[in-house]
Amino acid sequence: MPGETHRDDWHGDHTEEGAALQEAGVDAVVASGFEAGGHRGSFLRAAEDSLTGTFSLVPQIADTVNLPVIAAGGIADARGVVAALVLGAEAVQMGTVFLACEESGASPLHRQVLRGKKAGHTALTKGFTGRLARGIHNRLLEELNQAGTPVLPYPLQRRLVRNLAIPAEAAGRSDLLPLWAGQSANLSTCNDVLAFLTSLVGEISEIGEFAIQWSAAIRENQSLK
Ligand SMILES: Cc1cc2nc3c(=O)[nH]c(=O)nc-3n(C[C@H](O)[C@H](O)[C@H](O)COP(=O)(O)O)c2cc1C
Image (cartoon, rainbow, N blue to C red; front, side, top):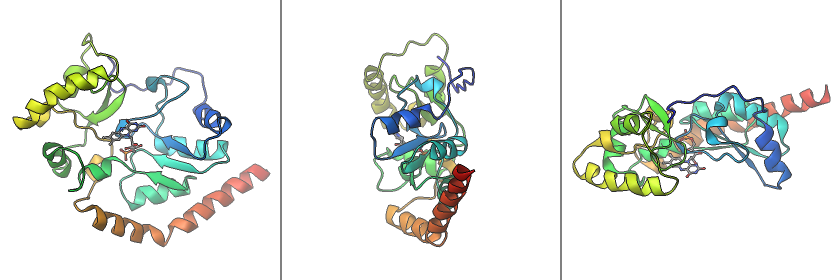
């Protein structure tokens, strides 16, 4: 079972999937980098063969499709949102950053690890659910990623790990919990979701629209060349 798998050995184009989604008639494309917490959608290839960073993926997808692009993966604050807009996204999808909020459905231990800034090391695993997902590197993830550890197909593996997570949670063992999180987990400052979003929108509002227009103008100029 591979842990952090980065495969650059296939000869496809990372934008193929965006083009295929446009062809299929979707309304928008989510460009999800491998930094993202949890599962990532991949349609043309295995998840292990679809690992591109957000910074590289978003502008390439924006150049490929004539649809709104939603950037996902590693975006945790106003800097990340504005960067994504400059790269050609018209919206962002944030996941991990909300896990630490009081309102999140994450378990108290999971939130505690995130708030304690102990989420600097994440890794990919199929061991949580049977599908490739990113979580905080702890004992559970490390053991599930050991070579030769059998992993059941999704969603059976999820059930199996859930049966371990319930007693682990009761025993206060965050090292044995599946701690879903993306690479920017330590950037999360969210305690109260409304306060977090109000502050985020305030920080972005001055520059966001300008960033989108600037990026669209750059792409327009490039396509005229
Ligand atoms: C706990 C958790 C579970 C997720 N589950 C899924 C999922 O089942 N399918 C999916 O396409 N994306 C899933 N995601 C990814 C989010 O939809 C989103 O794209 C991602 O969280 C964005 O990256 P970030 O976590 O770095 O903010 C999940 C994310 C988290 C944090």
